[in-house]
Image 1 (cartoon, rainbow over the protein chains, first blue to last red):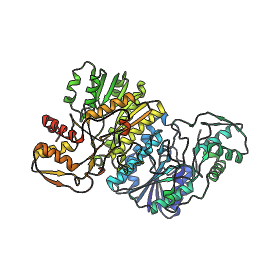
Image 2: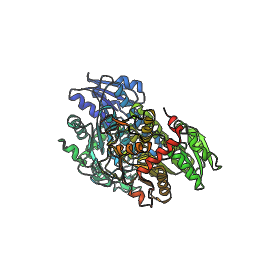
Image 3: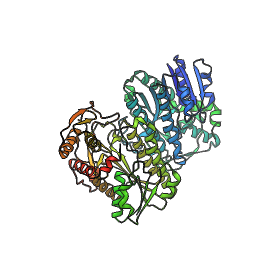
Image 4: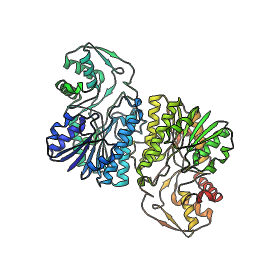
Length: 318
Length: 318
């Protein structure tokens, strides 16, 4: 297959690109390098089966021309900055919803009908059922990020209904692993590098979250795309466990051999729209034969090892 | 209160404007007159408490200036053209989502924090529970229209969470009554005027739908805005009954004393993204003391009487 991967130089997508190439597929990677890192696709660029297009998803001409001839789209580009939605409310609409619309229209113009999409467990808002299944009670959105993702999901399923597309929608928990560039392990490590004696923790540290290792995430995407046969296929992707932020801090400090004073900003939530508890029911994807190989603790430590071994990743962000 | 009403010259909003004025409120009506009808606000224009601003919601400068000094917003403007979403996929995004974003930003710029919003029962996609409650299982969107409304709902609830707004979200069934300008009664009446001997029916005529009389709908909005106290208040608005399209055809033909040959286009759905069964659980709004006064049959006949008495409404649309 000739795959089109958006956000190809990003954390998850660059790992997906490598996996697709290793499986013998051709890949066109599309990235605007606003948050993507050229070093993440150094390996891919050595392959004759990889082509990089440096452009923005809001540039519809570049997009339509780059996507031509591809068989399937993996749309992973996004504004993944969950915390600062209220600082720039239009950014999520533009980067997540309108960009998705542009991808769908470029597909339609080129007769491409298969799309995999990275959504988020944040679409459940403050869920009332744990672990949360895909058909949980109709959520009330609490973040502009989660809302832009649910709107993009709905665009995709409307194109499936209206234009005969097939969609694979993945609602991720936070993903960990190699090429990780943002999230709590990043933030804590960056803060501890600056001052090992103390650590500011957003909220009360009791937020319960689930995490998934990036290679386990990609396993699931590959299995779903191969085996799921519905017109619209929606899957939660997460671990069958969760941890408290405080536990994760423990693992990080143990690895770094640090005993910082913990300074909690207080409150149940780390930021506006933060969900104090994320724990997804992943029995639907497990029923297709998927099993994650790494625990949350292993994922956190692997991520930390990666950041320690790649100081440029931390330095690349102020 | 000084109310800001978007889509003020439209079917439901113009009735709401009259009601707000009758209750002693001041109203600023905003409409671009793309589908709005000047004759619907002839009465309102005679009131010293009514001000009309003729502008588009995509004109953010006009919007910010018109909304200044208002206490509450009733955002009813929309692309309400459900059937033709796939003919122009960006229209729903622009008219329903971006327009709502513009309204919210104009409110934020002016310190206005209370918004009532007309959503739709279409957000439930093809529901699995009937009557469908507000917290029905997480739906898969089947229409661009329904999806643009759920995205607008989520924007509003995100502004409630992020900026301290209070939201009143109403998921309407199809509304009937005076100033009705589109929908099945309109279509059937228009077709029968052109040729009383036959009637084309989209689908198999067995679609089951619920309808609500416009004054009952406005009663519910007024009661909810007065009595609901949550940050985000979501209400289904419909009747505790539904009818088959064929039943409604029977009432219409009886009133017109016609016996046309019925020509079904066939299939369970009238169009792409049509929901063959819409029936909402309205116990949440009923618990606030609301009771509709008109049955579906009375609503259909009242609508037909209105169209018969106002031939210009039918003539205004090709």
